Image 1 (cartoon, rainbow, N blue to C red):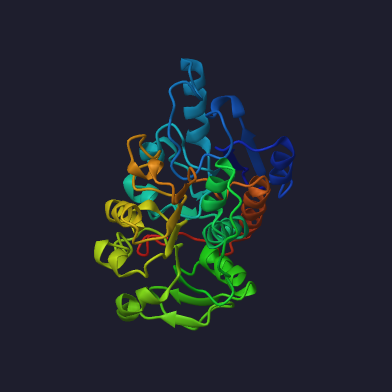
Image 2 (spheres, rainbow, N blue to C red):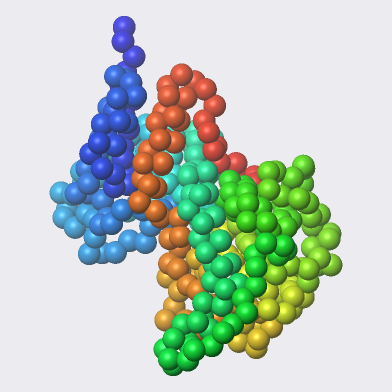
Amino acid sequence: MSAPPVKVLLAIRVDPHQVARIAAVSPRLLVTYRPELLPAGGLTGAAPARDPADGVTSMGGASAWRDLLADAEIMLGFDWEEPGNLLRRAPRLRWVQADSAGIGEFVAAHGLVDDRLQLTTASGVHGQPISEYVLAGMLHFAKRFPDLAEWKAAREWRPYTPVELAGSEVLIIGLGAIGRAVARLCAAVGMRVTGLRRTGGPPPPGVSHILGHAELDERLPDFSFVVLAAPLTPWTHHLLDRPRIERLRRGAVVINVGRGALIDEEALVAALAGGGLGGAVLDVFEIEPLPAASPLWSLSNVVITAHSCGAVTEEPDRIVDLFIDNLGRYLSGQALRNLYQADRGY
């Protein structure tokens, strides 16, 4: 007797050739892709914001999406419509492959921790583009691009003295796939790299020293750059709080590619506006989208991107590659890659 089909529902937008690649993993797979039932745009992320003008607008469309959820055993992406009701709406669901590395907040907010449901993250997919973004942010301030733009606008011919990244001290908070990629790139340009992670252990490639948490406050003034690449957990919430921000070296640059709430945003604004910090490169914020009233918009020493620094053109293919690898593991009963651990929050 043949095994029953494994029903796979694609809840993010992908190209047709990617759908074919997924279906080709095994004849047991019954892959459903209904892009007309999905929100407009590309990858949804872990917590897509629903726009009433997007996605399902008719009763028939809503009913069709509910029927697909009710049958799905595997999903690529979460239910964009009612993520908090996913376990009720998809009673046969056993595994969701997320298209984001940091899903802890989303999972906790929507009550998606359940013994019958495996969740896997996209950890490792975004390391290269995000590390390049971090390096670009460092160069932006080290080579004084804001000053250059100002002098160009004023038609001023000014010789200037930038600084080298080589030899600069950088602290990377969080040494997951993204933090390790940042470390390798920083080390490649000659920076001295220190890492901070909750679990300790030996330093990964590119990192010369692992900082103990107890050493953090004492060592903060040593760094010209502080990169936050950690997930948001109770341990990391406001890890860079007002006292720690005030301890940073004058002129230091803060780069946040983790989660917005790793930093006390109000204290960060005060340090940037008051001249204590040299600048900030921010892809994530405590409230997203960043409100128009936020003072961060008006600060000339702040670079802002809309939580999208890893969204390069290669991203969809890399997520599908990961999903395909995990599909093979799922069908053969092997452990899945990037399995989310609720007790850690990542």
